[in-house]
Image (cartoon, rainbow, N blue to C red; front, side, top):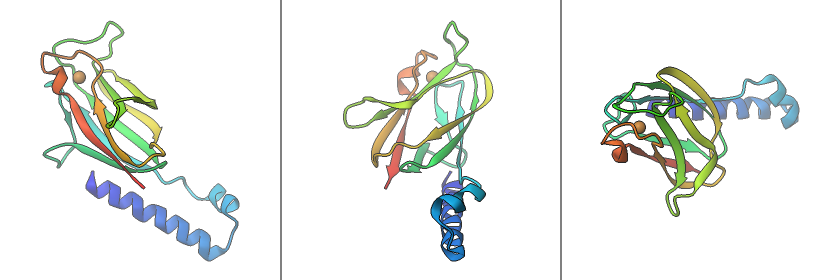
Length: 148
Ligand SMILES: [Cu+2]
């Protein structure tokens, strides 16, 4: 996760720098530049825990308003929803636990991807599971930080 975050920042800077160097107007330059994407790989595991490779305590950090590709692998816990969803991923503002629009996701078993836009407001957020996936469901949450 840390590695990919650094990669993304570098990529954004490079795109911005090349736009400046070529002196093209912003809109025109962006038409020909690939949209930088911050890729996050997440495991929603059968033990009712979110996991990110290489992180003891999983945590997501994004930049305000950036494009995010969430690549999820989900493994079924002890219980799931009637619609087949086995875990959820709902982003809440830490200060009042209100939901962030567009970030209320449900996972099916296996791999899936979500294209998302990071919240515009920097600050502390939390991710919570919204599917009763086992008796440990209440512990299925994760810190999420939005940097300016
Ligand atoms: Cu869960």
